[in-house]
Image (cartoon, rainbow, N blue to C red; front, side, top):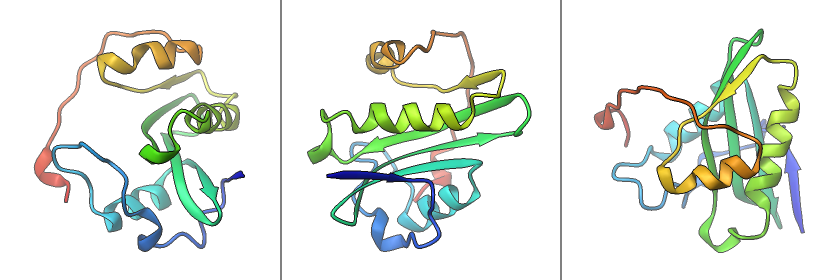
Length: 131
């Protein structure tokens, strides 16, 4: 059974190993934990105590938010966990004007099914900052 929580007070670095599979240079587990602790909102999915997915949001808390990461462990994908994580974090920010995210082209249909629309945007990546 999957449980969901916004409480990350007991989250530890060891809970976060095994995410970011396939990333060219993934963040370290310590960076991952620091990002979650510094986020405006976080929702964690657990199965038998193990963290199997998470989503985080950064925001000004007034009008805008950005969802930088949604990850579900590969062995738990296809079970609706990512969809439920997104549903919960968007509900946490229902008062905001905009919630944006960026994703690979292949993921656009997934986010469109969740009610998001494609936008034009720009970005800058410093891959040396990870790891």
